[in-house]
Length: 354
Image (tube, rainbow, N blue to C red; front, side):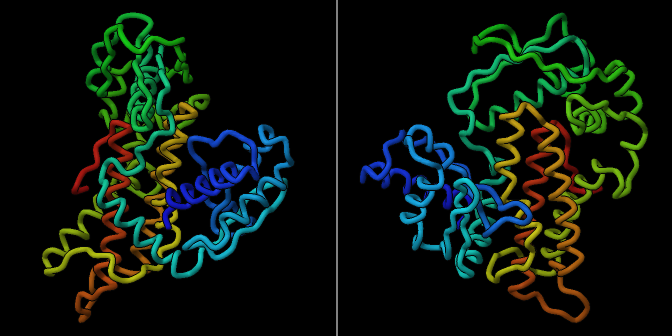
């Protein structure tokens, strides 16, 4: 059971409760589930009861108990608890958890660069507007790309004539036209330098990362540290993790085997980071915050290197390729896929060799 499947299971429980007149409330278009936070109960949590309580004219905890009775016993769910003011907490059974990990890896590899794309902003119309300043221009461009992955109709525009050097950063300014909506002004702290000067010192990839990685209200560090090839440089860490994932695939081909998730893999941090990527992407779109996506890519990269160090996807010494190696390779390839897709949405290249 993937997080998306669990979300659909909860949504079906809401519909059933409404159909049976146990609840009188509008059925939401979607239900969000998320990983339980540290100190919480179970594997996943959902706040849909708090969302429905007002319309149902009932306490949220009572709504949660109604839904719990209709979710309990669903395939893949071991236990459902109601905690706090009305949160639903789900514990998956062990076999379902293994199936969820397998389904997750298959989904990432099958969807490729479109993994994480969804409909969180379906029907939304966004008109982004920014000043004639490089950080604002790059941020608006990234937001347009990210919001479109969630189904929004987006255009961006500049208050003034575009800087010709923005094109070297991949920024294009669209001509006036649909959509028409009240403009959302993109106003991060200015970079303090012109695009031409930044490009000459750092190149387009480092410039975009330096402008997008900090939150908009924080200063953008744009020094030579962005070019340092070490794990202390988050940009290098993310791109190097991607190139290492691709190198593992090439190495496996030389040894005569490929990836196939045939055996459960113990990589909780990495698989959790991959499973959380769609929500991180949707949150970056909802909050107009590309830094959320950048930070999540760092989490994936850190988890990837920890996974690679703990259990090599390639045979070592006299080992022969096994089902375990094929499964680990599939997880590594899924990580590379997410890193490449996320970097692309930020307008940053993901080299095969680094």
